[in-house]
Amino acid sequence: MIRRATPDDVEEIVAIFEPSFGTLDFLPTLHTHEEHLAWFERRLREDEGFILGRGFAVLQDDWLTYLYVHPDAIGTGIGHALFEHATTLRPDGMQFWVFQQNERARRFYEAQGWCPDGAERIETELTGSPLHEVRYRLPLAVSRLATRTPEPI
Image 1 (tube, rainbow, N blue to C red):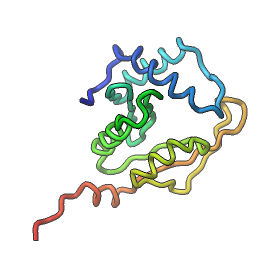
Image 2: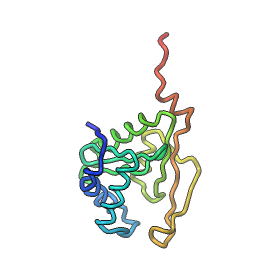
Image 3: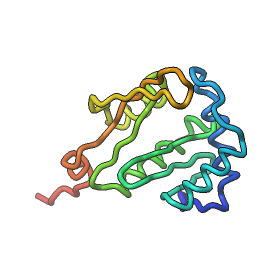
């Protein structure tokens, strides 16, 4: 069952995040464990966090800022359930950035019917090297159609 994450869940969140982020072999280790704990504690205080088994998601306004599943739990449906939960919570649409090189994540989102909207950005502060990101967004009109109950005939 998906539940709201609180700052008390920060150890569990970081225990999911670190090995999952570690699968992104195009990125170096960026932060220490202690920095991750502080960062995610703040995110869980300020934003909407959700946890399901060995996966979590964080929403900030209409942005999905984090959706991570522990590598041992990939393919179990946890990511799909969290993503569906997020879209249900944002019926007017949401958006998120994905590293262009993160092919697994891009395949996952595109299998859910999402696609890049053409916006791109280059992040250089994280590593000192350019990291290309693409934005995914489900427009308001599409998200309302997707959640609308058909009228009986």
